[in-house]
Length: 311
Ligand code: RRO
Image (tube, rainbow, N blue to C red; front, side, top):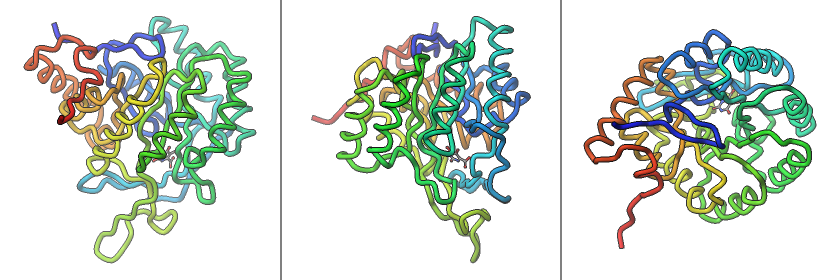
């Protein structure tokens, strides 16, 4: 029997596929749909302390090889997601879900995390260090000093299972420097990767999204090689207690297989889920299982991280 179940941060999941933060996770209704699909779990839209309307529309566009977005962190505010998760964990105590969050400043991040720490929330927290779309706010994880400082401060009071959502890195030295920082902390996971920040897509003579004169995060088919490189680079460098979530360019079971081969313990669907809808979870799960069956693999551990090199 072929199984795609997985373990992440000490929690078991029936399937290694789930949504990526930002897609199908803005409201309780959307989150319930992901929960009730074949996805192993869900992650919420990244929550800030207060409700945010986000950037002006149009702010997301599907394009032939992926997507471009500059949503600007629209979300219902922490309390909405936290209250829902607290209610859900009473209703479905045997399952584990992810809460994505970040503050609009380091102080706000601490305020949010202290609220989560003080609550009864018993799931996983994903701290988003890689939002590319808030005008005037650089991606935190591209500033290594700031990243190290925030994580140092967080782990002085935060004791619940925590991981971080990372932007793609493009230089081996940056993989080394980032991993050296992450290895100092009791992180449960890193999630590679968020969208490739600040791309520009043009149709005829115009940009296709309104915010930032068309600059936006790129997802989908465009980003798979970058995503795989980041998954594998961190799989090679991080201590084994820090697991990897692979996100970026998963259109097929083969793409999910490649993420796992690079070291991912969980695989997220972003642009594909946005384009195809919930059926994507079933289709990609079946495609992944068919590849595993053909290769004689029964579980993810049979091939996770076992990417072959050329001597
Ligand atoms: O809301 C967004 O604009 C957004 C976020 Br927070 C993120 O982390 N990644 C992205 O592509 N868009």
